[in-house]
Image (cartoon, rainbow, N blue to C red; front, top):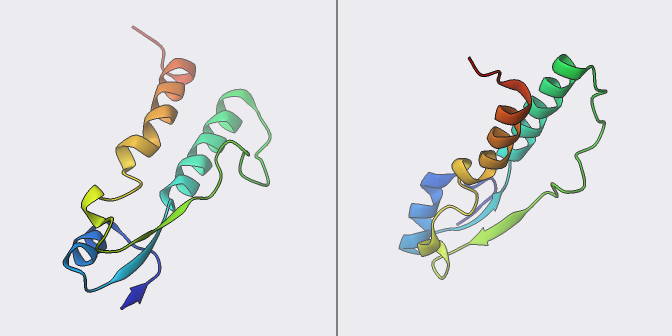
Length: 94
């Protein structure tokens, strides 16, 4: 079976060899939207009509051969640079 929009649980199915899954970095779109809104509300920045070029859409085909590496776009790694940015720009100490 082939499936679009693989999620972490589908990687387990791919490990077993029953499926081939296209896994996209879908959560990045939501994180970029939050980033844009934060900039807009905090600094009055315009909301971009397209994603910044440094954040290209990425996807991976996951099957039995590479499923052992786990989910290719873990939330903790995708959001980490944004959390660091937001902490620096928007969180006031004290």
